[in-house]
Image 1 (cartoon, rainbow, N blue to C red):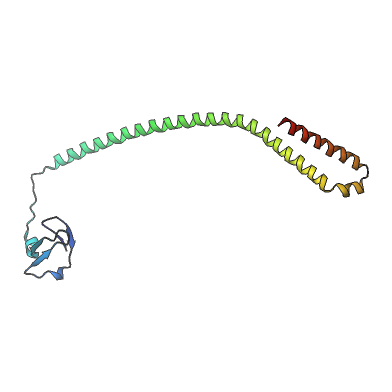
Image 2 (image 1 turned 135 degrees about the horizontal axis):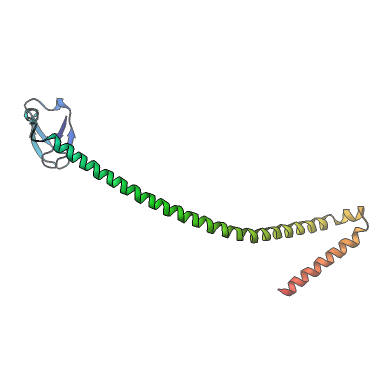
Length: 165
């Protein structure tokens, strides 16, 4: 059974076997209020049905509430659709702007990407030639002059860049 404290209205669930037929004192665990509780007192309360309520009034009030709820839902839907339309417009504008920016960035970034790949590949090729210079000269004896000239040219380019800095 559920018992409510008369002081603070806190509700407690208590087993029926704990309260005898003659009643007993109870203490609220929340506010420490002590009161006498009798099971018969609660059961003796008579519930009276008030027949003054007219069903037409209830139906009219219900219809008014339903109409108001429908109007609120309609206004909320209109606001939501307006917000969604504005969001879609902003998103489409952002997409247009980003595609234009990406196209400009892609042209410039592609050029620099290719340039970096070319420089790295060229440096790797020079390092490979320098590493394998002796075996290549043994196989191709005429290659010694070409490699010597290549390395001298690279040395001159290096000195030129250092002078610029």
